[in-house]
Length: 151
Image (cartoon, one colour):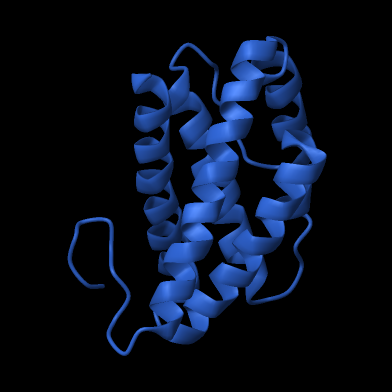
């Protein structure tokens, strides 16, 4: 019974972290939050419907000047989250196409329970990131940061 609550809280914390870290590469203003919100909304949909591999490939395929830096940072944060869930995993040296595919195939998706847990937490984290970025973009004040204060 405690696991879902713990995973939900972890997803909320990482959702905030994703927004904070993506904001550092595209700016923390409302326009940046709108870019991040749109990106994680689309990524969330791909992760949810098509799975982990497709979700990472989606993030790494972004080419627009505004989206690309945020997408790479989101992918990096999701890899960090996976390794946080299971510290025994070998983090890939780079967050690029082939290294991510090898990491997912060799480290994450080889065990169904691990893959399902990772999928659930990543999807939830992206939902929280989308909601956080959306709220920040609509707010009359500066976006919130994971430290609890305003950015």
